[in-house]
Image (cartoon, rainbow, N blue to C red):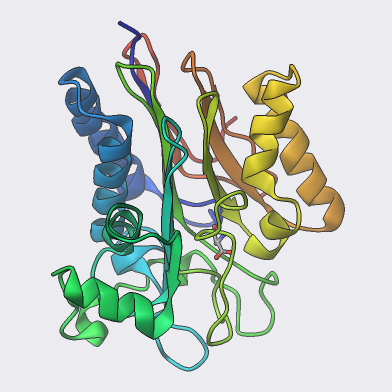
Length: 294
Ligand code: ASP
């Protein structure tokens, strides 16, 4: 039986000026909890959703509870997941009013003939599915990224950002990936980034699982997540593929990072921003956590 592996991220918007001790403790605890689930034989797809729910609910990252409002003051969230074993995918975009966008994405995948539901239709569907509503957005959201992008308005880096995601390999050798975000700070109402778009912000096949984080416009323009599969299929290692994709985004002027796993549990976690919060479980059962180090 193959050994399971996992890598998660809490966004590539990390700033050296900020202390990430709480996120480091939290990311380790999530990987520990998910190591136990994987050893119990839980599927990569289920573990990808469970991991993302823990990251969304923590309020520590710019996703789920940690999201910030758009320019109109509304919280519009994006999320997606993909099952490498079956090629199925589910996503929601510009999603409002419900606690866990990743659960809505899973329901889109399981309960509809579609891949992506957006806006009011996505919210209506979430209600029909009995997902948990947010009663008071003003109290629920923590705006975790505000300290991350600590530049005065208009003087920060363009498209400052944050996100969560994970890539999982289970004991049956199946891969899955998930990504969830509040999007870039100060985004226009209706703006959708790479996160809910399979091939851009998420991708999983029988060879690779990928979750991206960064200035989503650049990840869409390069089909960043899908590129990892094609490069690995053409003979690149997962690390070579990851480095090439992030280099291409840098050449266009974009910033961010990605996490990826291959079917043997090898991982890649390249980024060209200051840091990327991330933690992983190796096939040997070792856990690691990093923010600024490579
Ligand atoms: N990629 C996300 C977006 O563009 C943001 C992020 O990953 O930090 O919405």
